[in-house]
Amino acid sequence: MNESFGTRLRARLDECGPLCVGIDPSPALLHAWGLDDSPAGLERFSRTVVETVGDVAALVKPQSAFYERWGSRGIAVLERTIADLREAGTLVILDVKRGDIDSTMAAYAEAYLDRGSPLAADAVTLSPYLGFGSLEGAIQSAMANDAGVFVLARTSNPEAAPLQRLVADQVLAGVAAANAGHEPLGPIGVVMGATLPELEHSLDDLNGPILAPGLGAQGASPADVARLFASVRHAVVPSVSRAVLADPKRLRSHTLYFRDECAAHLDAKIATQA
Ligand SMILES: O=c1ccn([C@@H]2O[C@H](COP(=O)(O)O)[C@@H](O)[C@H]2O)c(=O)[nH]1
Image 1 (cartoon, rainbow, N blue to C red):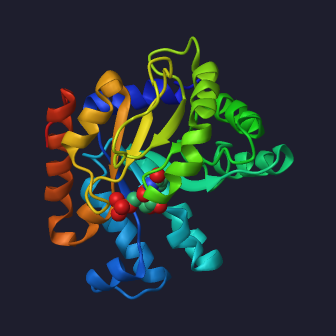
Image 2: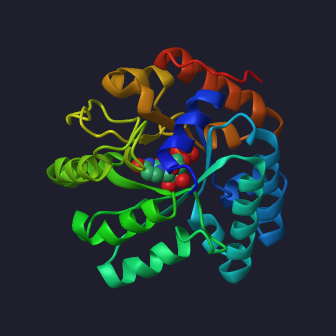
């Protein structure tokens, strides 16, 4: 039996500090790096991120959309990127935001969570828009494969607020129920933007990780993360993409800056200093 996602995540956060780095090979970033917008450019970009920050970021989050743009050739690069990250010992969250009826969710779970799949990640992002219950099979599959999921609760984009504030408590209650009894952290997380003006929801019973995108380019700071998630600071994972990816020469130093600032504000110790 392998260790659960919650156990592996706890160990990785304690070792490397609280930061997830996104891999978002957009046309603009490929251009800024002097790379072609092509599968070869995607591959060079992704490899560079893995090699440069794989040992200092607790998690790395490839954004599937930027690979899907290139069809099967982009997906092949995504498969290799996931394999490279796993080889480097970094936990991989695949940002795919999937959500559908139960039978279709079973196929998504097979694609992203079944440990034999070429696209299997340590965790994936899921959308609860078809009802939290529609994710039940994927949650079971994640647990059976010692993987995790992050369910969208309050995303970082401002236009989400009027819709999501109506249903976020249902999502949080479902996640808390799925995580009950798991130690040191349940494998089912939520996505809560670091950009939220205020929290508006209790996370006290969640017992799972909180992925908090929005650092840097979307305006949130490490201090915002600490203020918003003060009651659950041991379980929050701030996430940053463009603010560290903008310049390949500064990728490592900017990653270390965000990681160390987040650790300082969240009062987290880092076992392995770079
Ligand atoms: O609520 C959410 C959920 C996911 N994202 C994704 O994270 C990155 C953010 O990129 P930045 O460059 O750090 O702004 C991107 O892949 C989003 O799709 C999010 O922003 N908010």
